[in-house]
Amino acid sequence: MNETITTADIIVVGAGMVGSATALGFAQQGFSVILIEAFQPDTQFDAEHVDNRVSALTRASEKLLDDLGVWSDMRQMRVTAYSDMHVWDAEGAGSIHFDAAELAEPSLGHIVENHVTQLALWQAMMASDNVEVICPDTVVTVSRAEQDGDPISEVQLKSGLVLHASLVVAADGKKSVLRDLLGIDTQGWLYDQHALVATVTTATGHLYTAWQRFMPDGPLAFLPLSHNQDKDCSIVWSTTPEKAKQLLEMDAVEFCQALTVASEVRLGEITAVESRGVFPLELKHATTYIKEGFVLVGDAAHAIHPLAGQGVNLGFQDVEALIRLVKAARQQGRDIGGLRVLRQFERERKGSNMTMLAAMDGFKRLFSNRIKPVSMIRNAGLSLVDNAGPVKQFFVRYAMGLN
Ligand SMILES: Cc1cc2nc3c(=O)[nH]c(=O)nc-3n(C[C@H](O)[C@H](O)[C@H](O)COP(=O)(O)OP(=O)(O)OC[C@H]3O[C@@H](n4cnc5c(N)ncnc54)[C@H](O)[C@@H]3O)c2cc1C
Image (cartoon, rainbow, N blue to C red; front, side, top):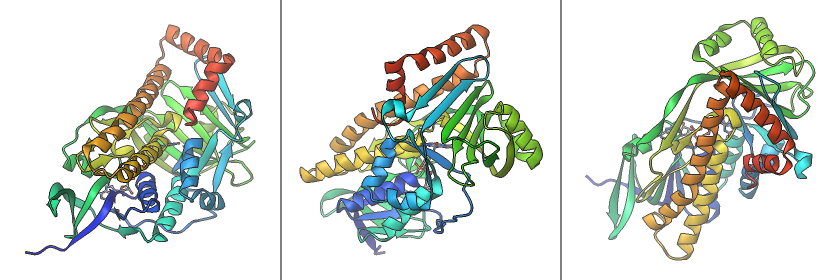
């Protein structure tokens, strides 16, 4: 039987924030791109309603999105700059405060609904002549084949389509099917915590500050939203799976009371809550990011505890590195799916991602520890860093992606 084969320079699987940015970035560099997504996205922006899935985007991510030409569209929809971050320990007096002004930066970053980022990227892709979107469809097999005597990556879709490309990018999230089809293992573990997310209204307002209280069960974060007269926040409350379930099932009044207590009333009483959801948390790291003709990016390569809001930021750093290295390989006439360029990518990104994964895992364990001497050292450490100008600046610049 003769199959119809469609060929492109690059195939991207998964149109989440990372896959969409990858597809758009390659298209803007003149590569022909096919993007495959399993689910039809919501292509409407709702000005009245804030989505409960948000991300704290670093300045480095902002730069990438600006370079891709979508940041101004995102600003027109809804993004919230935050100037301060206040972190404190529930089991002592240790605290730390970060201020954009101390760094002579306009903000520490932005809180952005994932939907806003995805929608802006999606609209830009739809306007590009270099991207063909196949949606809804999924990948069922992958292999290396030959085309005109050259090795090529082959992808077969559930619909029966067969696609060829020099490079296939797996951006299909932490449960990546492509990673499994490529036989790439992962290391990691499920955390004993689930994250409850919701949009809440506070009595006193957020002061454009990201607030985070570390409790032994897990951290509670309030992320400011420029909505409802600066009184709304998106929360990420990481806690035991049992408590997350209870919080999800409470009526709104009970939930607001529990949250007011858990936040130590730092933002006043919590007066309203909407769109609660719960997500299990895990650490997952692919043992390798590459196979000849294939590469993993974003959560497909690394999933991380959300306590410092770094997951998609790491994914965007993967995107920046991959596009830069593949573009250079093409300019030098090298095979863009060859192991030489892919190894360069892995060398650049794997160590850096691993450092962040290990640091967040360490923080999670340190702040969950109830042993008195540990909590005393932890509290002293927080206050010490707070007063140690250069060390503090190093940490915050690193977290902002400005290192
Ligand atoms: C509670 C919580 C809070 C978080 N907060 C932050 C934060 O503040 N800052 C931050 O940087 N990160 C944060 N993260 C992490 C961030 O959400 C993830 O890192 C990010 O969403 C990963 O994006 P991705 O595009 O790699 O994967 P995904 O968002 O998982 O996208 C994968 C895409 O692939 C599609 N897909 C899946 N399988 C297939 C297939 N077989 N074929 C085709 N398509 C497929 C899916 O439909 C989806 O569209 C948080 C995570 C959680 C759980």
